[in-house]
Image (cartoon, rainbow, N blue to C red; front, side):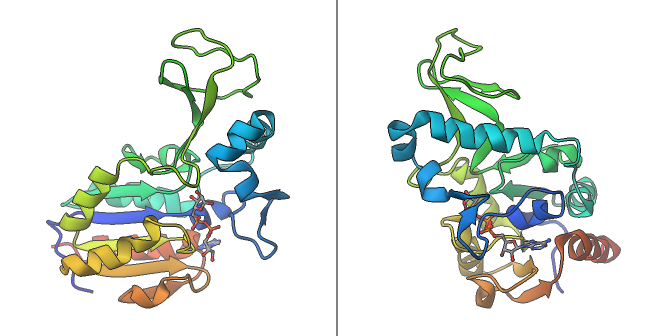
Length: 241
Ligand code: APR
């Protein structure tokens, strides 16, 4: 693998990297996420129609994320190690709304689909930290208005966050690594093609199974992220001059 150390590494992670930390991924065989159909809870229309149901879904997920058994795994830790040592730096973009990269030591994480432990006030637009359940009467920590909080997550039909940062990384990177993402949701699924169009980066997919965009990658590493990612990071760091 020929990678210029002076160029940043762009990493895209998906639900697969958190699966071994005890958080289920989205696209199981039955198309349900723990009994919920995604389009019934992860759209602005669903929130307008049945806000309590949507809040309950995210309350359950927030509780699961904060369970004592959930912790970063060796893949999260390895990516933090790469960011510490890679000369050109690492741009770590995640589709995950969990905070396992941060708990694994990554200082700067681009959460393109938002964050489960934050809420946004529909009144004052403030984004604030939130670790409890959200109830119909919950008040915004910034402005005090009750009943205006929504999860700070990007729903289907909404614009992902920080696309300008991601576009700059696509232009600049010398290596693109996609980890544990099924390649079904755009724009993230299209990053590999965008990187290839720029033309100076090697591209690697790390996944248990084939994704919808596997054929677009230069290299595919099959297996659990907790094993394949530390291996890959060791290899990259060993190759540094
Ligand atoms: N190691 C590596 N890959 C794994 C592992 C593992 N231990 N476990 C599962 N995978 C892979 C699966 O093979 C699958 O390709 O991770 C991928 C998970 O895919 P999805 O559940 O579709 O998750 P993701 O691609 O992150 O979903 C994208 O869709 O629902 C929306 O906004 C949500 O951010 C999410 C987006």
